Image (cartoon, rainbow, N blue to C red; front, top):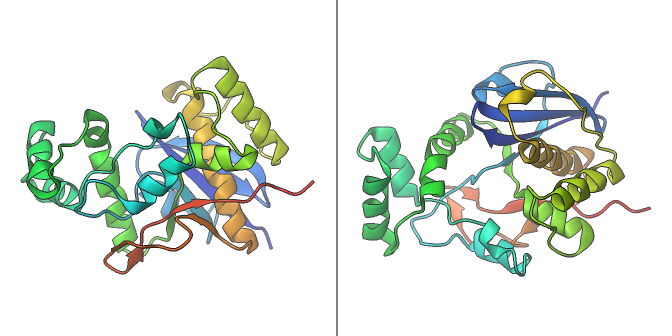
Length: 238
C-alpha cells in the first residue's frame, strides 16, 4: 500500500503543495484553497504538514512559538507571533476588517498589537480553522525549525543563495528531490516550494509511524481540545 504525505506553504496564489508517495516527490502543484487538497483522492489518507499556525490563544505569545525561537539562536525573528484567537474570529464574523482593527483587538486582549505580516496571514489561518473544525487532520510545521533540527543549527536566510542551496541539499539528503519545473511554478517563490517540501517530509515521518517530535515536547496550551505544538522530525540515520 502506498504511503502518502503532503506539505503545504502559503504563496500569493494560494498554497504550494508537495505530495510524496512512499517518501518520494510525486507531484508539486499550486492550489487556491486547502479544500482542493482535502477533497481530492490523489493521496487518500495523507498525513499533511502545513506552514501556518494551527491552534490559537488569546495571549501575546503561544508557548510553541516561544519554544521554537529557542531553537533558532540569531534567527528567532523568523518565528512571528501568531494572531490572537479573537482577531481570527473577528475576521470570520466581520467585526475585524483591516490591520488597524486587528491590532486594536489584539491590544485589548493581549496588551500588544499584531504585525502586518501576521494580519496578512489571517485569511489563511481562518481557512485552516474551518477545515480543521470540519475534521481535517493537519500538522503545524515551521520550516526553519525543521531544517535547523536536521543539522543542529539555524540555516542561512532562506532567500539567500546559500540558504536556498543548503535547504535543497538537505532535502535531497532526505530523499526529497524537487523538480525544476511544475504547473503553476511562476506563481510561487523558490523558498515557498522548499518550505512545502520540508513540511511534506515532516508529515511523512508521521505516516511512517516514527515517534513524533514536537516543539514543545508536550503541549502546554490548547485551542479547545487541540494541543498547540509545532511538528518536526528527527534527522535520518545514515
